[in-house]
Image (cartoon, rainbow, N blue to C red; front, side, top):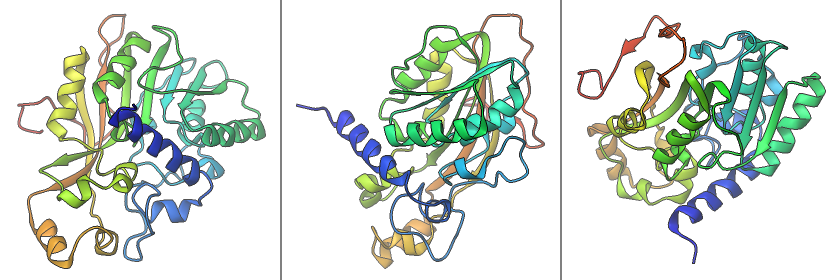
Length: 293
């Protein structure tokens, strides 16, 4: 009998295979491409990539919740791994930074997404960008090969987040680092949202408490953790109305529950690497218990 975690994975995989065929506008106007688009808010989760070097519009499905490559300190010749690479958007931005002497590897467990990403890479003539099908809880990658790991609004979809951070630690070289954008919570979601499979694959119900998220990173052994960016996510009323009554929406909106997009950076100990502070005017050293979390 399949575990509940496996059922969640199967649901996410099926939904994101369907999302691969949706357009960016539809995905951006819903919660990570899930559910009917909102008529109130266009960009619910994602941020604008236009103007960023390496951006490829055909590879942007509007499924992200941040700009992790903007903060990732990717250097020429680096090997970069993107977790949940989708149609290849963040991989192509990373490739712009690492240049032709580096390598970018995207991992996704949707074969439909992998096919779409490979097609995009072939059109661009990028022979140093590779896409592999696999589970990011058990990456099809050898130990200690990556200089940088990035991910954009994917870990919230994974049932065992500690397993993913352990895998990131494994595949990074000593002194390597990651920059990840994700959805986290402060307070507790209404029961109807917590139990909705659709909201799980819509990047919300699978999110965990921000403090727990940061603790997973520290408990894995990473150091120099930095909260690079944080912004509140406002779920529009017409999206919430698919799951909550008007009274429940009012209570949710006036309560103390917050949904946030965060970008977080941390380093694997070892190697001859100086702590790299994020290239952001909003950088904040953040560890659980320091007051910023």
